[in-house]
Length: 411
Image 1 (cartoon, helix red, strand yellow):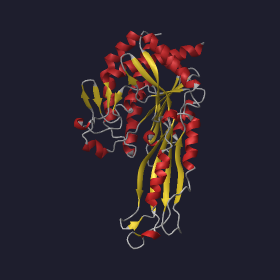
Image 2 (cartoon, rainbow, N blue to C red):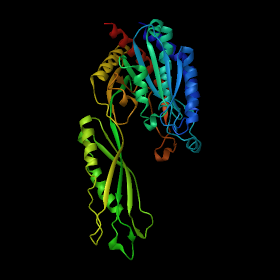
Image 3 (cartoon, rainbow, N blue to C red):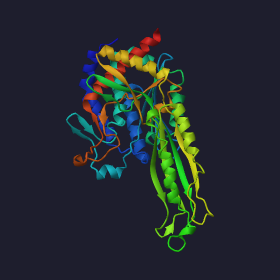
Image 4 (cartoon, rainbow, N blue to C red):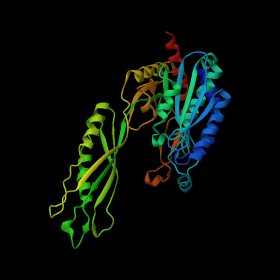
């Protein structure tokens, strides 16, 4: 097994090159709704990995408004397979980047830019790992069937990508490694071992319109009914079970002199535990048809309808992820550092994989302010950044995690 010192020295010497690759990615706008930019980044990423022997395939996302997923494979000399997951898209429209002067900027240890932390930095970590294994562990590098999958629409939870991953990584793979940003302190790394599931709902209330001045008693106010329904939904939040409900948008009515005949709201629910998640969905749907508002004349009751519009199941604690965490924990000890578990509220592609392939997440660089493009220090706002100093330590940890995983697979 190669020594950590030699690999660390190599990575540090080549860090300027790796960051040049990151800059070339960050400077491409890859907002999910900008498929041309997403596809351009996919092409650039394929070109970056080609010298390492990776062959690229571009697969159109199921939604034609999105770009193409990127699948890169390097066949190995054994039947051992390891998958690595990143994504191409960011949440920043081109005009937002221009308006907020959000671009590549190095400031001390911080590297600002769209996707520097979420998740183009993670893609570069994968490249660093493959490059170092090629140089210091060529037998391992040539032995493994490497599969890198890069989602074109992760920020929109493209539901076809999980199936694409399982198809190419296969169910008997050793691991699916997800390179969302991680957290690093002083010789301490947090690895993501569980994520909340998410369900979204469309809530609609139907009332009866009437002139607000002349015929107010005839009207049944759909917005007032929505207010009652929203309170019922919000009351389902249970922090003791890590169950949260968020009413994200509300709209209704047409003009102020009319009793509103309709209102609508969008709601999301999140939970770690599958049973809590399922019970939460049932509790929200049970509010269907539970109207409390009628018109004053008593001849019309408001109507409430609730539709489950989308759901991504939780990624709970599980044996496959726990086994990978223990492997990375042993690798960390050999490097003189530590890892701890993190259960994260946000979703990633790992939510679609853990039940089929052992999966671990948070393997990307450390940074902060993901999804933020504004720089207004007086208001406590700052732009997304990745820490330059986190790239080499995180790549080194992941390299030795993989080497340890392969070593254990021999036994």
